[in-house]
Image 1: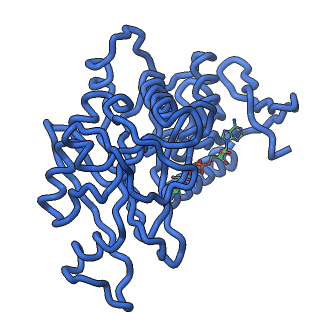
Image 2: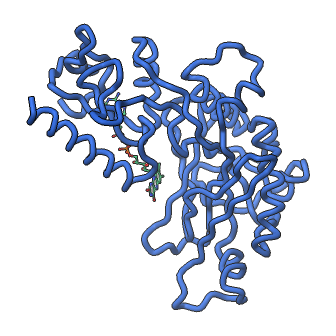
Image 3: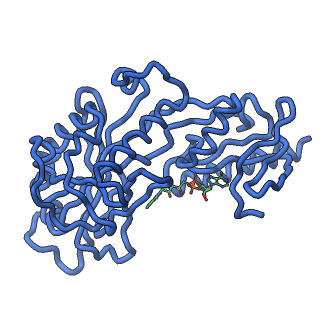
Length: 312
Ligand SMILES: Cc1cc2nc3c(=O)[nH]c(=O)nc-3n(C[C@H](O)[C@H](O)[C@H](O)COP(=O)(O)OP(=O)(O)OC[C@H]3O[C@@H](n4cnc5c(N)ncnc54)[C@H](O)[C@@H]3O)c2cc1C
């Protein structure tokens, strides 16, 4: 029963009575915790279709930058070779460009760039480090804040609603798919070439296993994101010697940093303001970012449900 996808809600009046799963089963419950993550687009579409209040939520989007780990070690430890007792170095960078924040996200020393799309015809990348952090590469998301106002300003469409940022995110992911060549290959460009608008005639080795395709990333990223990243990489090179280099590669697109949608909830009961017994929770609902905060939000919601049920 629990490996079945939820495909519909059972709602009577203003109260959620339970859910319907893919195989048609009805599961009734006194409380339903909706913690389906930031990539469960079908759930966001379902809420939208049922006129259950959701809101566009700012998130961040950009690329994953990968350097040889030895370059990051040299920049951070200020020595030619990292000694055997030093761990692979990490970094954290942030820059304001025209009042837009650009920052490193989920930096993975000795790590691997991984495919993270959840649907067809999209390219999404993410990163992770094995416990020994012994891969020869250092990768990090380098992402730009995306506010609804930026998307409205840069959009030709007048159809702006609570799914506007989700649609914006998906559009970039689909462009990355086309630019990658229509398979799991990701579009990529060397860092200095990216910043100086040059096509990369060759690409360095990369940890992304499905492969990369040399591309003009200005065709993938919206102009305000591309421009902010170009400026930020140059500034990062001033802050961290050796960072701004054509030995580094940028792989698109890092787009699942957090949820582009918020599911509102009452601050006291944690229930949805319109639908009783519905408890939005975790990263997908917009109340967490990362494993620990998502787990803590789950605990918080469980306590709230216990208190409500115990006092009724
Ligand atoms: C490659 C990678 C590396 C990461 N590394 C880190 C890290 O080092 N540290 C860190 O803090 N975070 C990391 N994260 C992010 C972290 O995984 C998330 O922040 C966290 O898992 C969010 O927890 P959540 O419970 O809100 O959602 P999720 O963990 O996404 O859980 C949502 C669950 O809901 C299920 N679901 C979706 N739709 C439906 C449906 N319709 N019906 C039923 N079930 C559904 C999904 O299958 C999933 O099991 C990483 C993510 C990735 C992809």
